[in-house]
Amino acid sequence: MSRRFWSLCLAAMLAPCAAAAAGDATEEGLATLWEGLWHQSGTPTRVVRWENEIRFRMTGIDLAQHRDYVTQALRTVTQEAGVQLVDVTDQPGETPNLTVEIVPDTALQDNQPCVTFLDFRTETRVDRASIQMRSRDTYRCAYHEAMHLMGVRGHPGGHTVLSYFPQKVDGLTSLDRVMLRAWYSPRMKGGMTPFEALPVLSDELIASLPEAERPAAQQTRDRFFAATVEQMQAYAAGRGDIPAIVKRSGKSTEDGIRHGRSEMSYFLGVAYFEGATVGADQKQALGWFERAASAGNRRAQSYLAGPGTR
Ligand SMILES: [Zn+2]
Image (cartoon, rainbow, N blue to C red; front, side):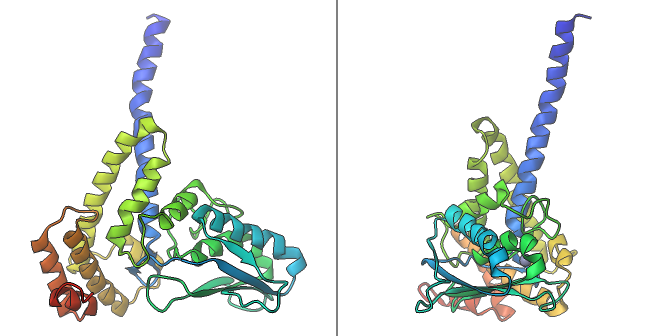
């Protein structure tokens, strides 16, 4: 057997393996982006984001030790998103719309040593926010909370600093950057429902890949969309088990799941109505709006009441 033959043989064997590995990475990336939209209560959320500059003040203890690191985390996420960041810590006359407080190690709880609150009147635009971190946990919390600050409320699995088991805590992963760029791209709008947001997130992921990998990634995306819609239809209709992502949150309750099902029915109505993630189908849209409306979902009821009332 000639050496040449062997090398050809190896190449032939490796090529499909490499393609399969790339496909897995794309699928894992898509799953991470989708999970990023889910709140831990067990329902996916709308996109909320900052529409104005962020003016922050840092308060609390050990600031000399933590200020540069935390500021760098805030700079990293806002730069990726294209949001202006202004530090008003040393300007007492200025009113911040973000406060970052470093608290003692005895504050908060051991199982939640840092927390971000996003303040919004409507689920579209963040008006104000606050972050608290225990002094000793600042190193592992800063980038995680900075991602929440930008509006990403989920704790997806996969390669993200938002994961409960992150591989990296002191910076953003490439997937985090994809998430932020998509979240703040002109195509994304505050208030978008999950199936409207998913294509924007997916396209940003595919655009981040080398050109040669994109056609295969698009096929993976199409399969992922179809599987996700099917799974969510089963969830909304109360068939089968609840999605693994809801279970994994560990905070789902029966009420939360019931609410999640009615929300999901409404989101599926929007998806079919607008042809987002799935092909437009007005009959399906109507069916899902009616299901959501009969479960008391107000937005679905106003959709059914006619255009312009949403
Ligand atoms: Zn978190």
